[in-house]
Length: 195
Image (cartoon, rainbow, N blue to C red; front, top):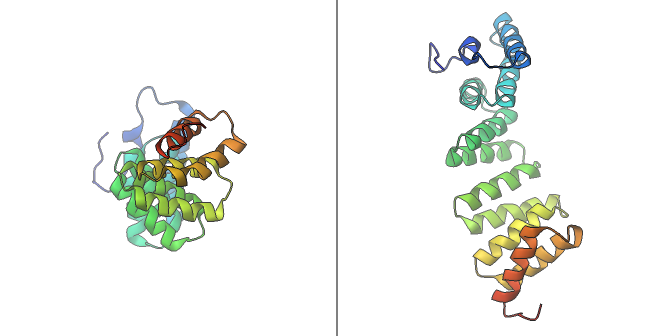
C-alpha cells in the first residue's frame, strides 16, 4: 500500500484485486462522504470504523491520529486507536490509548478488562490484577475476568487467593478447561493435594 502523504489515506491504494466488492463499496462510500466535507470529524471517524472493520488497521491508525490531532477529547477515537494498535502488536501504544479513553470515559469497564489483559501480556501482573479487580466491580459475574485474576494470583505465588476466583468461574462454567487447570494448580501450590 502506498499513500501520497504519511498522514493521508487513499482508499484506492487499499483496494487490491481480491478485495471483496462489499468492502470496496463500504470504503469508497466512506471516502466520498469525507470528501464532501473533510473538516467534519464524524465522517472521518466513520471511515476509521470501516477501515478497522476490514482489518486496514495501519490506515485506521493514521485516520484516528488525524482526528485526535484536531480534537483529543473524542473518546471513541482513543478506544478504536488502542484496538488497532493492539492488533498491530503495538501493545505499549495501545495501553496509552486505552488509558486515555478511560480518563475520558471512566465508567467503561470493558476498557479496564482490555488494559488488564494487555498488562498481563506485558508481564505486569500486579497492575493487571488492579485493573481486572476494578473491572469486576462493574461486572461482578464475568467468568473471564475471574479466571484471569485467578491465573494472575497463581503467577504471583498466591494460589490460596486464586481458588475463590477460579471456583466462582467453574460455578458458571464447570467444564472450562483453563479454569480447571488453573484451579488444580492453585490447589497443588497451596498444599491442598486432596482436592
